[in-house]
Length: 79
Image (cartoon, rainbow, N blue to C red; front, side, top):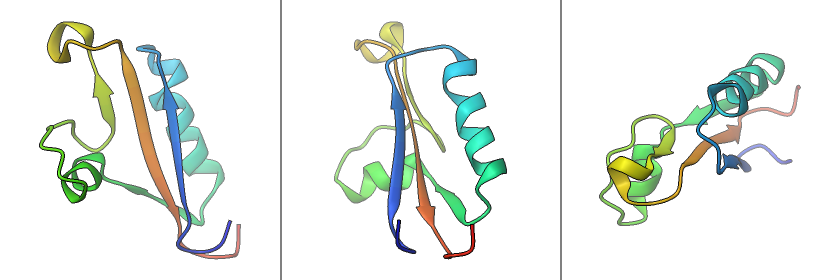
């Protein structure tokens, strides 16, 4: 992936070991990437949904299935 390229990790799971743990491990193992705040990305697309730094949708809160997403951007070519 070229510098500036984006990668989105998304699941339809509510389990931390399939979501946050995987996203954290990816950042730890891939120093050339930074995480992009989900709130900012959604706002740029005209979506007014407060989800925090990583998107997590809950059935009882959002009226959807459970979802998780984290976005990353490649900063450098030295990975």
